[in-house]
Length: 595
DNA sequence: GCCGTTTTCGGCCCGACTGTTTTCAGTCG
Image (tube, rainbow, N blue to C red; front, side, top):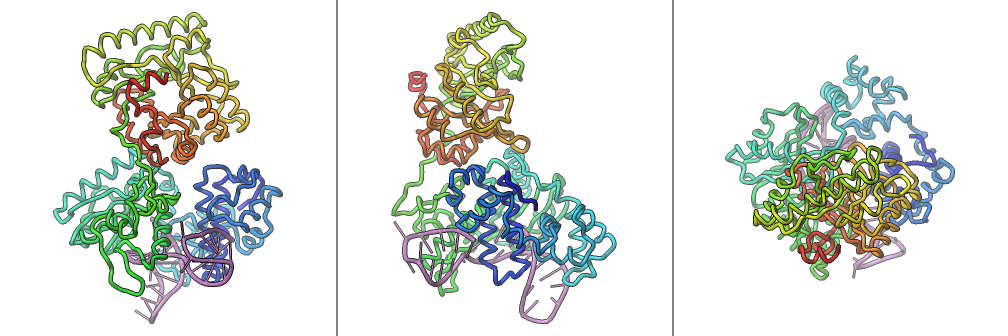
């Protein structure tokens, strides 16, 4: 647990969890609430939308809920000197490998310290040392451990590293659907739902949470654990079971009778933070919440709910869309006396896709689309769109002269004009117009690889970053603002450039970007490619609050990809966006005036 | 250690499952 001046949020979260663990080892009862506070702070840091170091620079650390005066001061000391004496003195009581062992599922603070103290677990390779000890049957001899726990540790050691990663939404959806089909084969199952992060449409999914309504819980759990593709059953009881699939995905199932299924839906949808906040809110009304229903203070009787809506109404709250259940103010806004939750955008509100790559050979150095313009028009009609934009990458600058580039773009314009006057009209669908656009690289110096004469041919342009991702926040912000300044440029596409699971986003001064967009009538894209989902939801929320307009584009490189609009809309909803915040919910006529 | 539409003091979500135990602690979500 090395502290240093440039600690990232992830490292800080890890540090705070280690401090919580140290307090737990020291005295769990005495430190009970301090432990909770540190764990909560760790969660908050992990989910913070800015680097803490930057917030500290601006004296805003305590604005993060869960970080107060003390932790803020300790972190400040780390940013200033590279170390916190207070944290150091707490952590120094225990060897650092203790905190590493806690990464193994099933091993918490207490188990980790017992293992470290009683076995030969070194600082260098704690996991392989533990594995050796298990093979030598040393664990089963320890107090509070036995043969079973020794076996469990061995199994987890083999698989937990593979399982740590998170999965993209479409993959998790597909796995979930297969399991749902399996569960429905049992006649005892009355209803099955996808819950947890899958229902809340989080950009990546850690494990798959399912629920089933049934009057025969034991039989349904039994049926679930007989799913042919299960690699290992982690736990199995009367009310829930957890299994691991060969891919490493964990699936949790909870079952409950129809009469109280509504409260199970609420509980198992989460998020954890939403539930805690909701339960604290309920306690003030002398009500205690659980997955079984609501208890009045002092009463043992549980009031049951078949529907989730009724559960929230009983608490004097509007039903809260799952995408908003992250404890970011939704409970207060849902009060029936307040009732100011946003009316979230829906897929059916979308009237256009503003980033599509056709197979028109634009001679780009990036990737070309696979579908013809006609196929894309057909797909757009099937989605009831009124307009779409063809946004192939710009022609490569290195392989062409300026005149050649202009010629290519002229040729594309002629092709699109022809599509508009002939194909779009002849198929008589909902589609009224296709736009001639491009997705243009923002070069490292903030200039564009096209001359004005080439840009003039376009109806409007998208710009985006495809190179030099690592620049200082200051330089990157200048770079982007420079590119956005061109009058033909309307949209900043996939603004952070992140690729989920493989590439972090760029650093930008978002306040400056937002202000610029508002002042100069520029829009930020929500890219619906499940690998991007960019802008990320938390930045969408900031943008919406500031009044920045957003666009939805799928970045489709095949007509089928245009179905990914669903994921883009999910991100918009998680960012509290309403129809009015999204440009391409406007009619063709209104949109056309804007450009 | 954090926090405030009953509080700057006195609270802090709630329950399932497991293994090693003889009634529960630890871990997880």
